[in-house]
Image 1 (cartoon, helix red, strand yellow):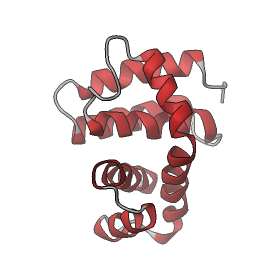
Image 2 (image 1 turned 135 degrees about the vertical axis):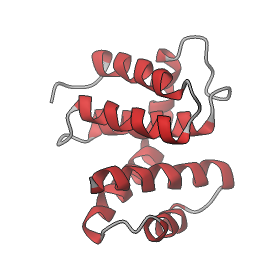
Image 3 (image 1 turned 45 degrees about the vertical axis):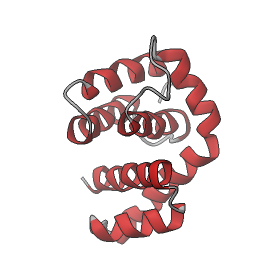
Image 4 (image 1 turned 120 degrees about the vertical axis):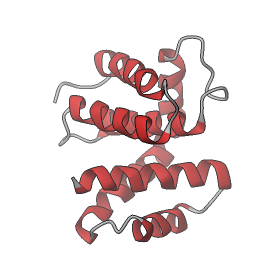
Length: 136
C-alpha cells in the first residue's frame, strides 16, 4: 500500500516540476510530508522522479509513438506525467510486474484525471508493455 502512496508522491512531484518548474528536491520533500509517506518508501518515490527526469526524452518519444492522434502538448498534464512515471517503471524497475504498474497508473488517472483518463492511460500503457517492456 505504501508503494501506492510513493507513486502518488512521485506523480504530484512530477506535476509540480512540469507545471511550476519546482526543483525536484523541493517538490519531493513537500509531497513526502504532505502525504506522510513512510521513510522506507521515500527512496522508491525519489527513484521514480529522478528516473523520469533522466529519461524524459526517450519516454516522451515512446508516448508519442503510442498515443495515436494525441500530441504531448495536447494531453492533460496529469495524464502525461502518469504515463511518464509508469513507462519509466515498466522499462527500468525490475521488481514490479507490468500489470501492477499499469493498474497503479490507471488508479492514479482515475483519482487525478478526468472521466476518460483511466481508459486513456490503460490503452497507451498496454501498447507500451507489449512493444517495449521486457518480460518480468
